[in-house]
Amino acid sequence: MKPNIISHGADQFDVKQSKKLSTFFNCAYFSFCSGELVALTLLVWVQTHSGMDLGFGVSAAAMAVGLICLISGSIVYRNSPPRGSIFTPIAQVFVAAISKRKQICPSNSEMLHVTNTTSGTSTMISNNVTLIHTEKFKFLDKACIKIQNNGMTRESPWRLCSVSQVEQVKVLLSVVPIFACTILFNTILAQLQTFSVQQGTYMNTHLTRDFQIPPASLQAIPYMMLIFVVPLYETAFVPLARRFTQRDSGISSLQRVGTGLFIATFSMVAAAIVEHKRRNSDKMLSIFWIAPQFLIFGVSEMFTAVGLIEFFYKQSIQGMQSFLTAMTYCSYSFGFYLSSLLVSFVNKVTTSTSTSTSGGGGWLSDNDLNKDRLDLFYWLLSALSLINFFNYLFWSKWYSCNPSLSHTPPITEPRQLVQDDLEKQTSITIINYNTNR
Image (cartoon, rainbow, N blue to C red; front, side, top):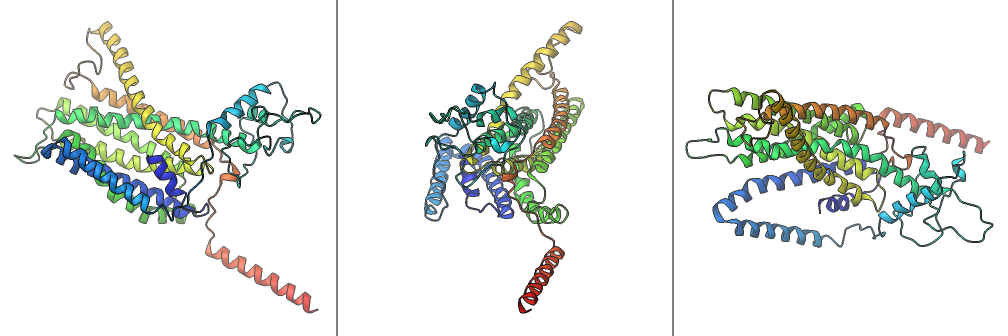
């Protein structure tokens, strides 16, 4: 549901309204954080004291209110008509390129097939957008080679594709490395929702003599902070950064994702330090010692999550926004799955190593943090996160946006505006003088 809500909300803005579009993504993330905070605090309290049935009832009522609000504005929404399956045109490009793999691409890109008028097949390319040919993934250009057959028959769309159709597939292939770099980021998130919560059970959860903090409620800490940080980011950081970068969004979406990936490393560093202190402390530490790792990751998620959604949306054309936006949430799934694989792999490697040396178990094999070495596992994730950040830097520099998708206009300085007006007035004066003569 989230990808559709985000893409539908962004569709209400014009292409040139990049400043408002960036603000919308921040507001949408603020709304998600507010909902998460209510779910992790108020809804948990209701379920704990009044039962799960009432908790589910409150959730259902909230969804009903949201549905009513959505329907009430349907009259004024800007809706994009369905354009058929997006996978069919993608498959057509690969099938056509493979079938013509022995053909030689022309040196002049203007000789490639520009428009596809062979049939009325569904296409993911908007009728008013034509993507410019680029030099990446040139093997796909073979799908645009038109074979001369003396005008006998027209080639099937599975044999001949347009340049715009091929370029959209190139865009999808280009964003895959960026998408892959965020998987480890969500693997770190998985640790905060599992091992960090388990850390809390081994710590002093008493806030007062009669009140205890449930370790699972620690997940609300970053959202409590983000409902203050996100508005501050929009009202203070973006205008300040805009003065230096001349961008409507302050910093580019790729820079925002990279900032978040870098900050996430320190979340695992803080987690490793706290776990080491907990293992070697003579007394039970307060549960608030593990709050910093949640706070640091909350800041990193504000940069990475919103930046990734904005990046995917701006790299897509009409009919593809929901698909590319959904890739952000696919990253969550892959990240949690990688977490399971990584825990199993680390257990297997460290168990075999410990058995051959001292006969002990692996880092996470005992399900007891006092015996396991969770701190070493956190240090491993810190190292992997740092390596992942440098890997992201490589792919972000390699990535180049299709010129047709560069919707963000540069901010014009006031001095430049005055100079342009003077040039226009001078040219008008000269024209009037020549006309009078």
